[in-house]
Length: 501
Image 1 (cartoon, one colour):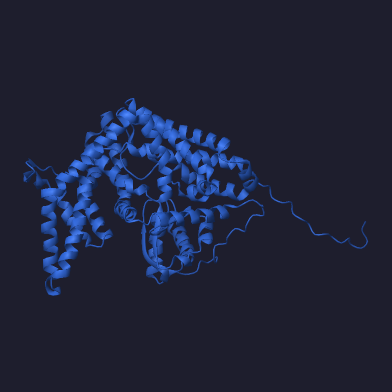
Image 2: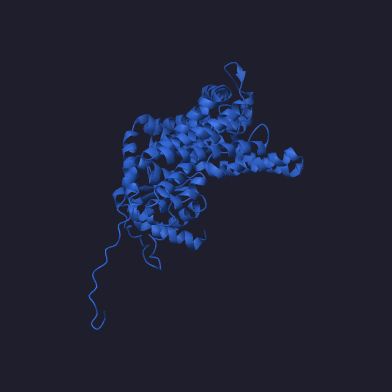
């Protein structure tokens, strides 16, 4: 979108989230604007959902507005400018009008959205455990890295394609350097974000984690062997930065304020770096190696069952907001093997949901409101942005959410069987799914074969999700409730005009 359109969207969103005074923090990931709000009761959820640019909302540790990959960065930048300018201005056309409620007697899309909001709130309460909160915070470390992972993954795929064809070796070398630069320093970024998320000084977290990727660690011997630069990967960086945060807090509590600027950074970097060298790198290296072996074994020996379980259970993880806790595993596999074989299987959950939504659209032929929601959310679903369909359609309806999971399990089984037969499909980056994942695919037989397997999985997910929902997604009572035809309008009696028959 242009800057003018992005600004218009930002100006429309700002008053609906309680205004500038209610916003404590602004950030974004690949598809969502993430707002830290002082008082969430000030959010006008119905009006926000009615904005054409808004694909959905997620009330999580931050209030998240789904805008899509093409718009989120621009809208975030414009919102920050509005906040810097003191809260923005009214749009020339006034407030964005909210569509009037349809006259159908059946529950509307707004009713489903409200039900989805209540389910989200209940899930958030259930997830308020220390372990699940920790998983969310770890996910928050990796979410800001996703755009760079995607960009570098696509550049790496392009370099690999040219290398396979034997074309432009000089360009291949340049593209490899471009794609590998970020990945070689990924531990530093993870350390920086970890310290920032857990309340430490970000640059100290990055400094301690940077020890892991320093080439000179090859001269250091620990546990009877020389270390390898990068050993432990993102797991080691995460642990090292967490230790740095604790060291910084402990030192700051006991050091006089006059010495803090010298002593605290020194103690943090010195003891955090030594702990990384003589313990964390080895331990994290073993953990990372175990993750790689486990993923390889899972597909080699349990392709069908593993694919069904992973593809079928991913939507519930999305519902609980825990799916991003898998990002460290994906990132570890990408560092070790060049791609993550889990992401293409998990992406099948979105395919099952797309097929499910198409069946709901056909079954509820009299419910114009829900059908309009599906029409607006389906393109995003095809590109792997599933939250609008999850929270706006399938989850509030109940049974269709289950049949969508059945479709995801079928697609996952297809990809899993292919992997067991030697045609495993991986992704060189984490983030996209659906059709948006095609440019990132990798496999032992080249991009075309990988695309064929992945496309076959998507098609299987679409078809099974559609059929399962069409035939088993609704009871007669549900159809009577949700597909009731609109009542005929009652016209007022017209008095005859004098002089007419």
